[in-house]
Structures are given as C-alpha cells and as structure tokens.
Length: 211
Image (cartoon, rainbow, N blue to C red; front, side):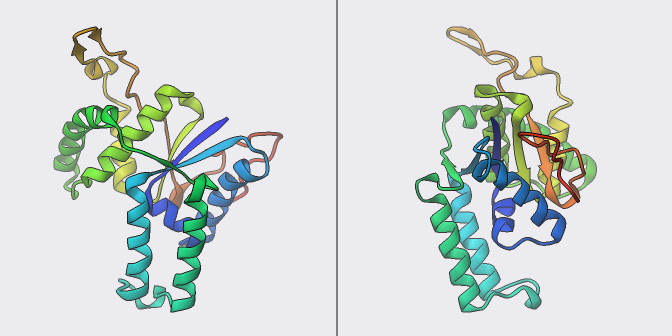
C-alpha cells in the first residue's frame, strides 16, 4: 500500500493542472487509489484552507490574467474539492499533532541554513510542518512506499537537504530515553513539475508512468 501526502499546491493541481506532465502524474496516483485500492492519499488539514484560498486567488486576483477562473469554473473546483475531502472520499485529512511540532524543531535549522546558502526565501511554518508530517507518515508506515507530493521547488530542496543529515542528529532525549533515530527521516518526495519516468512505480503489473 502506497501513501501519498499532498501539499496545498499539489492538491490545487488535481483540479487545475499546470501542464500535461503534472496532470498525468496526478492521475497516475489517483488511479492507484480509485482503480486498484492500493494507495492512500492524505492532505494536511492546514492545507485544506490553503486550497480554498488558492482557488479564490485564481478567481478574484490571479497573478496571470490568463489563469483567472470564471464563476462556473470556480464553483466546479470548490464543489469537487469539498466532495473529495468529505469523509476522505479522495483526500483524507491528516491532522497536525505534537510529534509534527517536535519534528519541526529539527527541520527549521536545516531550512534556515539552506536558505542562507542558496539565497532563497524561507519556507512558511506550514511548509515545515508538512515536511514533518511526511516524515511521521513514513515512520508509522513504510518509508519506501511513502511520498510527499509537491509542486514547490523550494520545499523539494529542503526535503533533499534533510536527507543528508546524520540520523543521530534527530535523536531527542526524554524521560524514557532517546527517541528512535529513524523517527523523522524523510521518505520520497515527488516534485511534480519535473517528475521523471520511474519515480512513480505502479502498484500492480508493468505499467509505469508514461510521460
């Protein structure tokens, strides 16, 4: 069983894909759930509000006027998304918990150090929590079968940097001893705008993603 965690920008692309490559990749993931029942698609609860806001921006104040949604398209996006998160029909809401907050304390210094090196803007606190949530899902499930799905290149860069960190640095002492050093190791990260053939494995049979 594969586990996917969609951040807000990737979730928006389910309904308004930016290009054909992203559209194919997302449909490939959705089919694993809907056709094969071999995948679970999560969305952080904090991202649900972000998706609503992203649709509103495209309706009322788009950065590119060619991407502006009319009333009908806006209503369709809202309707589909509301249905997809209702009772987890497609996207199962995943709540922030204390373990994600603890993990964020480890991710933040790595993010700040990388930002200073590559001279890019910082991730939002929400983005840092999303990385922490992906790590926790990998810990309680199967790391090799867990994926963070994003269209945010900056988030992917921080995620990749996190993989270079010595696992012992994640060990936190507590009253019952040290936390398992594998607790917050990152799983796979799918950066959809640059996804390559082979990054998404089929759940059954030799049917790789055709880009």
